[in-house]
Image (cartoon, rainbow over all chains, first blue to last red; front, side):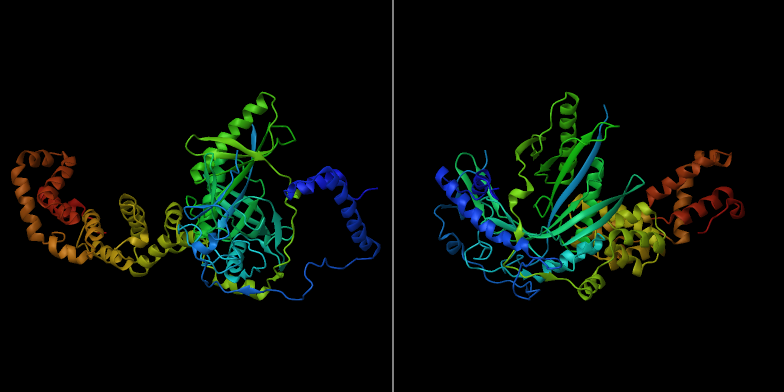
Length: 96
Length: 484
């Protein structure tokens, strides 16, 4: 049985705003299948009582004081933008 | 047909920190666009967020005030979606482990006490601001991006738009009292998104739930909900389906229009935020915050009723804001006629603030000065009526009560002087005097009025009353002079 279907590949691609050709969908389905199969090996282990690992370093509570730092200048902030106007980033229309 | 209504709310409150949640950019409102941004809040590659301690403390405050259980160990999560106001392509929020959960908020409306369950509370970052322009696309300002937000979600325990209004007012008041959030809805510092569903009485299944957005005031929340209830009713009554969707409230046209089909929660592809290490909140930290909590409005209201023996309704008004409650307490520290102070602050002080569009902090009449005015009423230097005029003069001139009284004169309390004026009045109204003496006692009010007219209201009323009776009836014992 497949772990991931072509339909799921299309769904994930759409969420990531990737346009895949039908060939690519097939190719990535096969690759993702391999990756997921490999990870599924973990299921063979007895993991009872093992906390999910989200961080590999045993550090907690890295906090900063509520003290201000200098921000970028407006010019710097906008310098990489392909399109700007009146101090704003200009983006294509997003609502209908 | 009457339907049952079920409402839950999701509130986003901006936390009153000086800087953003993960970087040192300022959170000031209303600055020039894109002047409070840095590589971290702009989502540039290779940067690392560091959590603002103050944001955590403020969230702990709110959680304690709403009786929530605070998680001892928590992680942040990435919520993935693409929108131009979100430069990273994900929002850092909390998912599997909320910041706090299972709280309650009780409030009273029309004598009924209601308790609303708080489902969860999350710490997260705000997105930027978009200005949509017809046809030409959108402009983005990232100043707000990364401002700390506290998301508070209730269980669907509210049953009417009015209840929802009261609940939100109560919640806002608590957040303001605790100095957790400014609660300013017009500025978007407090945003409320209610979800709502209906069912016919007797049916077990609730109808499809919709969500309302873009409600910029408490009034707007109420109006939007009323609109949505009517809309759902019409659909249900005509047998049409209700779509699960988000509607945008249009304040000017007073209608709500569908925004977009709601995405499934799974589509956000939440996963633990690898750039932030876990947050551990121990007992000691919680205790420290607990000790720093101010008295909450409801507790303060109860204390006001017990300590100062004032009416509950008055205590409610006086505790509307922390500053007003502080003002009242400062006054009664100096002047001990609690009822006088309560009545005065509610009618005169709030009246003039309303009239002049000021807030209590702007008032030149400090609590000590207001107490000074009350002393003059108490020792009968001035009457209550005069006090009202003097108060207005105090506000307008910035002078103290006794300065004003010294110039314009206080009450006429010299017995001979009052007697002389009354004699004149009786001489000029000899006919009324005869009528009074033959039994028409209600003319007493007329005589008092005449005396007050001649003295610009400055004659001491008790003295006028006493002397008038004596002179009209010639027998002070019979006149029943009452000394208070």
